[in-house]
Image (cartoon, rainbow, N blue to C red; front, side, top):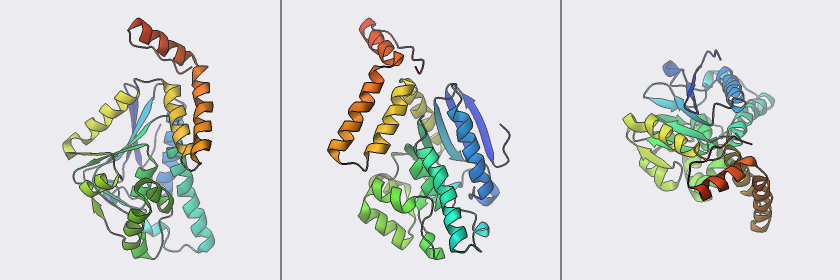
Length: 260
């Protein structure tokens, strides 16, 4: 997989996607968005990749926002198209059937926070800074920030962050629930890898079904969500992985999951 703006590697069940535009603080442009779609498509169909870690090159930024030079001349129609293109990618990440971990190094602003929000888990370095400063440019978050941030941290905190455009430090982001954990910068990638490897010990289909149940159930009523959960639980019971997991538990050995 040869891509201009990304570094791609895989090993030990983990796929790594590194946004590689450090001279632009890994700012997101349309070309990079399309390359990310390609990378996730490749990893989605690769049985050797059981989880994905998304990060940014260098020590300064995860993604320091969108490349403003690309949208400064947008009108209403082109703006909607620009927003939807980013939203399609964040939806792809959010609904990816394998765990996606954001390793947030340095600045994650605007689109950077939005891409992190779409990941299933977020680990931040102590020097990470997150925020949705779009109002300072006269626009709103356009890659899902107005919707995912409020669902993650609550309406009040999301209103405060978006309406002020304020950048929050890693400790505050953790306190608000915006990130799952904060680690020293030197330990960020190893912590993300350790988390990924802990997840991929589990049954691949159970991971995919768990992601589906959480994402699809979030905006349903509790009875509707429980009905969805029961349906997905039933699907799990029909898998070879479930039979293997139960048998391994009884036999007191490690299961050999095959994703079937």
